[in-house]
Image (cartoon, rainbow, N blue to C red; front, side, top):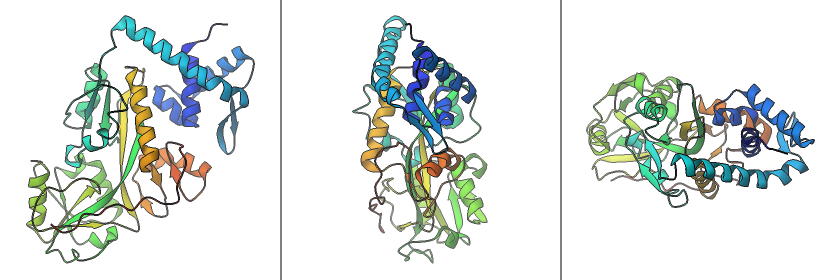
Length: 341
C-alpha cells in the first residue's frame, strides 16, 4: 500500500486543528480539496479516521492510532526533500509591527524552534511580497485582509492592550478604563489610520472621533508625543516594555479588554520544514503562557481574528476559547501592569 504524502499531510493538519476550514487555510487549499484528500486516504485504508458531527471534528480510534506514525512519515518526507533541495538551512523569519516589539514574542520560542535567521520587514505588504518571492520562509505579526493568494497563517498569541496616557490626562489616575471612556480623547497613531488596521477598527468600534497621526521614529519618540499632550492616548500591548519617558501612565482597558492578535504567516505550499518546529514551539508556549485565551463576554477581538476562532468557540462552549486546543485554565493570569514613570 503506497501512501500519498499530500493526503497524509491533510489528515495530520485536520487532526491538529480539529476544524476543516482552518486546516485548509494552513495548507493553502480549499476545504473541498481537503475533504477529498481525507476521503481518498480513508478509502485507501478502508476505515474512517475522522468523525464529523454537529459538535465538531474528532479522531476515531483508527485515527488516533494513525496520527503518530503519520507525523513521522511527514517528517521523513520533509527531510528527504530538504536533503535534495538544499533546504537544510536556518529558517528565515521576518517580522512587522515593530512599534509593538514582535521580537519579544519570538524570543520566547526561538530556542525550541531550531535555528532562525530574523529579518526586519517594514509592514505586512512588504513581508507578504518577500514570502511570495521566496526571500523568507515565514513571518510574524498581526495578519489582516487583504492577503495575497497562496499564503497561510495561524493565530499564535492574543495579547491584552493598555492605554498609555500623559499623567496630565483627565483619566490618568483611573485604575482601569473602559474603551468608550476615551471617546473624547485623541488617539495618537504612528501613521495614517487607514494603514493601521487594529487602531482603525478600535476607533470605529469605540467611537473615537479624534485621531492624529505622527511619523514613526520609534517607540520613545512616539511616547514623548503622547506625554506632551494631555488630550492624547496611545494603545500598546500590555507586555511591551516602555522606554524611560517621563510623564506617562499606562492604564489597563477592561469591559471589554481589547486583544492584539499575533500570527505566523507562511506560503501555503509548505515551504521550509522548520516551520513545523516553529509552529509546535508557539503552541507549546501558548499553553504554558495562556497566550490564546479568549472570552467574548470579557474581551474584544476585531475581525478577522474573531471570525477565525468563532467555530471552535461555539464547539467548546460559551465561556472560553483556546486556539491551540491545549488544556484550558479558569482565568488569564494577572498581567503585571506598567505604572507611572
